[in-house]
View (cartoon, rainbow, N blue to C red):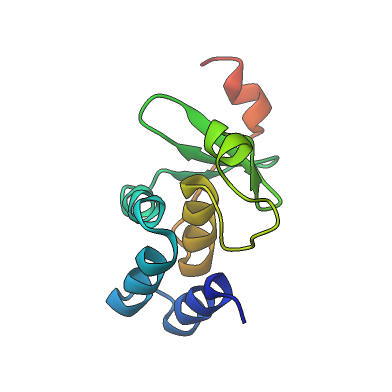
Amino acid sequence: MTAVEEWAAMLAAADELTSEAADAIIATHGDRGVRAIEAVGERRVKEYRDFTVVVGHSEEYVVENGVCECEDARYNLDPEDPTDLCWHVIAAKVARRIGAVDHHDMWYSEVREFL
């Protein structure tokens, strides 16, 4: 079991972000884990009909099928390492596991036109 699977199992078992799970996320992902936990706590993980979006401080990041196209994911992460994730993907995984996703019954592609 990978470290990501371990903290995901902790979240699923508790159905909430416990301090033990938060510690495991931070131990595995460092600052990316901290940023992800902050985003979840601030309800910045949005689920639309077509995408999951994590709202950053200056941009919105689309997470689709556990993949993000942010610059961190493109340039800094090892695609062969299942624990090497950007904070947007971590936030989406955490929010889904604990039911902290902000659901919007609309298409993100339509919302994006207004931004």
